[in-house]
Length: 471
Ligand SMILES: Nc1ncnc2c1ncn2[C@@H]1O[C@H](COP(=O)(O)OP(=O)(O)OP(=O)(O)O)[C@@H](O)[C@H]1O
Picture 1 (cartoon, rainbow, N blue to C red):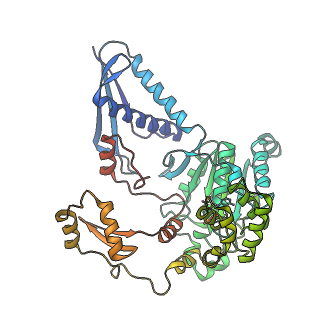
Picture 2 (cartoon, helix red, strand yellow; picture 1 turned 180 degrees about the vertical axis):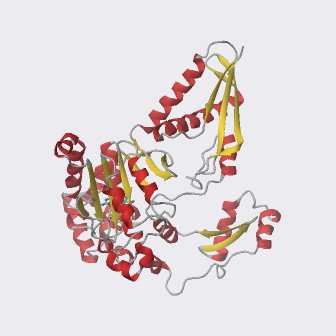
Picture 3 (tube, rainbow, N blue to C red; picture 1 turned 60 degrees about the vertical axis):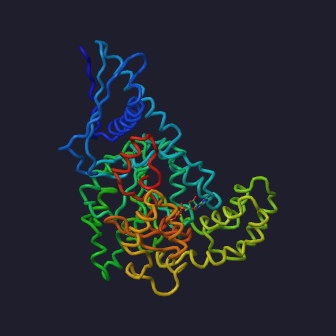
């Protein structure tokens, strides 16, 4: 009699269980791909069927549920358990030395993308003593639950990192999570579907050993003074209210053992109630590069260079501007990857960047003015081939399967920004690094790519990676 095992791929309620199942499912899919050619596992022949449930979809993501069915001849079911065991080990191995990012989906946390390689703490150069101070504080917190319980103090700690963009707030938190072997639960307070209840639930259901990260907290709420001018913003952009946030952070319903990091570019816009001790226990300004930072960044990037060269770079960079962000300096080094003396002599190249990106009132405005002086073009005004002309290029000139070549041609004709029609879709093409940088900076650190189910399925069948379009 054939024995059968059904490995359901539907998400369960426990994040960890779901995570395991998801990775296991990925593993099984890989196996399925391999078995399509030769359906053998060990010495056994196995039939593998992958079925997409037509009626059932995950309401949060719109992903259809799937099941994979293995059928093997014989009475020994151990082979199925060994497949699952192998899948489990693979799932765990995939996370070794990696940082898992979670995002909130409905009422639960789901892993976002593949676990990322841990970022070494030393790779984020903050001003002297800052990183050590925070790491020591977090470690002390983690190792002293008894201390909190003896004194009846809720076992949670809040941190606020504030300062201009590109100075390393988020990079540091990511590196810190790696150092502690924690995962990161990323939550956007601007999410319109976030309600008081949902936030409360999410904070209490965060996976163990994780840092909850609330980025750009100023974007969702402003201080009560500013709220008088703008009551809508004060009430929050979605169904989340300010008092709901305060309660979730330290209300009676809040859970124990929680580390929350908040970041903002505008600390002055935060309501004092949000940053009072208990909600924020440690505040840290992460600012433009100091001499110490510039020297250490240079040394780290060009380890073979002398300390004197690093100091020379720091002095000359500070002469250009004392408002340089680490991101700008890193970008400058990247331009002179193999040319450390060039990085020093060409330090003046940082000047226009310092002007455009230096800590300003609103990052988006500074960004736009960086490369697009004057009035911005509307979508209608953007150049680009008409629908008919696109069809001509795709079908008559045969570029349908060579879109990348066509993009090169269109760039020459229409410049770095043009619109293009493909079937029912209109795409805006961006073909210059500066503009791409603006987009990436404005879309947030963990942007959600479109799902592109057909593309994924197509690539799945060929055993190919999805590429940057969906990841
Ligand atoms: N202090 C630093 N040391 C090394 N690299 C840095 C540092 N600060 C920023 N970077 C680099 O610059 C980029 C942007 O940094 P990051 O996103 O951490 O800045 P941020 O302060 O969080 O900015 P924002 O306020 O826009 O969120 C990253 O690629 C990071 O590697």
